[in-house]
Length: 279
Image 1: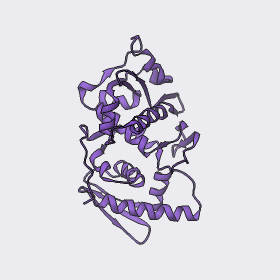
Image 2: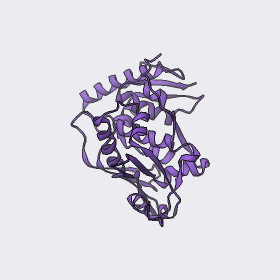
Image 3: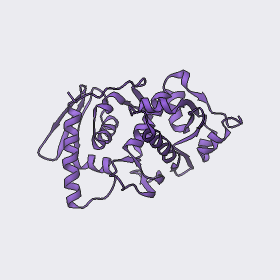
C-alpha cells in the first residue's frame, strides 16, 4: 500500500464534467518553467470540432488539486447557489466567466467558502505560503479560457470566476456552466476523482497520471494502454529523445505507485504497454 498522508478533508470525491476533463489543461511543471500566454488547439478526429485552450499562465498539477477541491466542495446540494447575473451581489462574479455563445444562456452555480476551508481540502499547512498559493492559483484558473468551435457555433467560458473578501477571508467561486451541468443534471456525464487516492500519491507525475487513468479506465474495467500515449497525455509538450526517456521512467515509477493503491491493479509489459484495471 502507498504511504498514507494524514488529512482531514471533508469532501473526498470530486466530479468533473467529461468535456472539461478530456481537454488537457494541467501538467507537471518544474520550478521556474511555467509558461505564459499558452494556447493549445485540439481538433476532433472527424475535423468538425475544434477546442482552443488559452492560459494567462500555464496550469500545473497543484492548480488541478485546487480545481478538484472546488468541485468537491460544490458536490453537496446545499453548497451550490444559482448564479443570477441580474443580482448586484454576484454580477461581477458572473461577468468574470466571460461566457460566449450558447453558454451565456445556460444556468450556472457558485459556492461560498473560505481560504481556511480550501486550505484544509488541499491538505496544506496553515500559513502565508499556502494562502498565497490559493490566491495565485485562483487567478490562474480564472484566466484560463476554453473555446469550442463546431460547424454550427462557437461557445466559450473561463474555468472559474472568484471574489475574495480580504477582511473575512470569505470566497465566492463561480463554476463555469459546463462544470455546473454535473450538479444540475447528472445525465450529462462526468468523471469521478477519488481525492483520498490522489493525496496518497506524493509527486506531480503520479497525480497527473492518476487523473488521466480515471478518465481512460472505468471502475470494474481493464484496458491495455501504451506508455508513450500516457507520456503525451501527462506532459503535453514535445520532447527530445532524452526527455522522452526520462519521462518514460517517470511514468513507469508513477504506475508502480498507483498500483499500490487499494483499487488498482497494474501490470507492465516489455512491449511498451501496460494493463490497467480498476477494481
